[in-house]
Length: 196
Image (cartoon, rainbow, N blue to C red):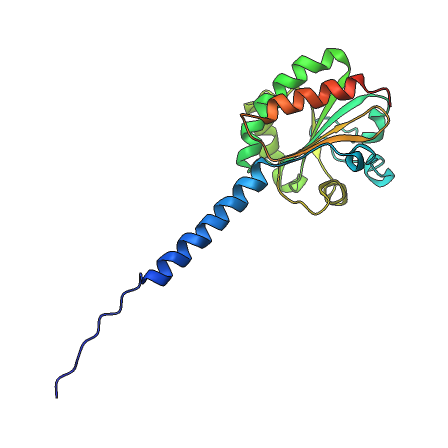
C-alpha cells in the first residue's frame, strides 16, 4: 500500500479574504479612534465639569502644590489627557506648546494630565517635558478624574476646551495633524468670545 500525501495549504481563499476583512476593520477602528473628535453640540455645550473633577487634587510634575481644575474657574481652560507612550500624543505636543505660546497672553490656561501611574512614570514624564519643551502645567490625572472626563472613550490624547463658567465647549479625541490644530484654535477663539 502506498501512502497518499496531501499537501494542506494554509492560505486558502477563505482565510485570505477573512484576513483582509479583519485587517480592514482593525485599520478603520484605529484611524477613527486616533483622529476623531466630538463635534460641538447643544448637549456638549451644556456639559459642566462635575465637582469631583474640579475639586480633585491631581499630582503636579513640578512643585508640591497639586493641580486643581477648580483653581482655573473664571478662565478659559485647555485640558489635555495624554501619556508618554502614546504616538498621537507625541505628535500633538509640539502643537500644544505653540498653542500655549499663542493663547497664554489672552488668558487661556493649559494643563496636561498624564493618564499614567505617577510613581511609575515620573522619570518618563520629566524626560517628555524636557524633550518637547513643554511650558504649561503638567501632572497626572487621578484615575477617577480621567475616567469621568473620558466618558468611556479610552483613546488618547483627549483635549477639552472649557469655558470660563466650567462648561466643556469642545472635546477632541485623538490628533490629526491636518485638521486638529485649526479646530483647536477655532474652539479656543470661541471659548474666549463666550461670555458664559
